[in-house]
Length: 417
Image (cartoon, rainbow, N blue to C red):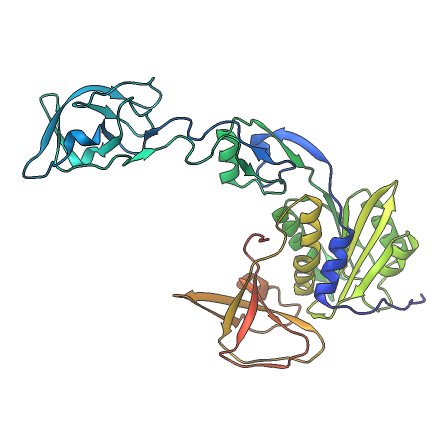
């Protein structure tokens, strides 16, 4: 097999820019609200109602006119006759200037009332409500439209439909919602040495962990994963599975992307008409990482050839595949949160590549500090489980002292702008 020259090695930031430059939007579909969780809105949402739709009580208590109990105190309580009751769902009631209406949380504020006094600040006797302090007009009242006003742009195209957003859409009487379609993601592992969980493990073989970890990452991002199995170390098997994968929107392989005699992925991608945009990235872990684009029946496909080492595979997914996947689904927010933290230990590295070091940050008061999770070998998958961040160490610096400020990427958190 003749190896062609590789594309120039680029920085992680350059690689992300190239990936996003090739991304595209999926189509739009309308789904029931209960099926829309964690999808991405395909349209702005403009409210045609006020939320809440009417002034209502924020407390169980008594609705009245504040001036009626002016000057009330424990020593000189004021009593008002209870002339009615308002509970949630009742039609509007009225209160006079010298009476009180028993009211429940969420009930429509009676006409004429300008305050609600909590029940725990009162007592009752012989049909009279007794007040032991004065009240301010507007107290304990939820005003119409204080949450959402008619005509307000409540949600934006590209917002993720979180549980709170589902509640907002329900409040706005939107039982079906327009969302971007979920991309289909093909996952292929490569290598004769791989054995699936539940099968016999022969001498010299290892378990196929990467495909399962990547499957989980795709689910977490909101895509639809399709695991196609293991491509054995032959050009024919690699080509067979890559052709099968071409029905999906994004194709991910893991392993087989370096310069070894049996690393067939780059050669087969080229033979299948995939334009390879980059093959190596100035990062550790994850230097060998392929990104390419093809068009199959006028449909654009994105190809990612991730490294075979478990940590390298996951870190490369987080940096490159995840942004592409979210971009396809129309997300406005695609970047992982980053923060500044103080190193709790000295770290040394070689110049030339950005290092993504598995770390664990903690917060004490207003101070964030971070330490590594221990040995950083790219095969130590446990280090990813124990990490809650990646410590990003710039390419051209070698020594990072304890107490130094560094940037961390929060791997267990959602996206930011």
